[in-house]
Figure (tube, rainbow, N blue to C red):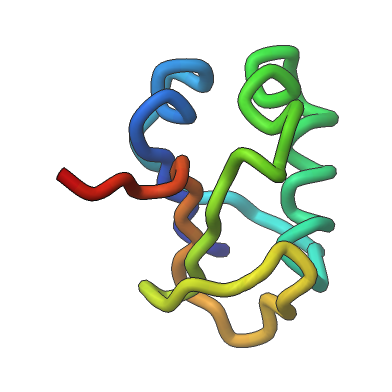
Amino acid sequence: MIDVMYFAWVRERIGLPKEQVETDAVTVNDLVAELVAREERYAAAFADTAALRVAIDQELTTFDAPLAGAREVAFFPPMTGG
């Protein structure tokens, strides 16, 4: 079981800020594929992963990063300064 968190427009498209997911995913990309296969709202949120950032256990990483031992995965758009 892994906590998956969604921020900004990702949360808006999916309709949830956070959920627990039972997964066999090996990488973040595998997790995204599992989520997209669930429902159209996930497909909409993950249509362009180049427009997203991902963090595993609060550390920025890439979509091909392994999930072994991860407790939390967060998806969010790139941050902009202000």
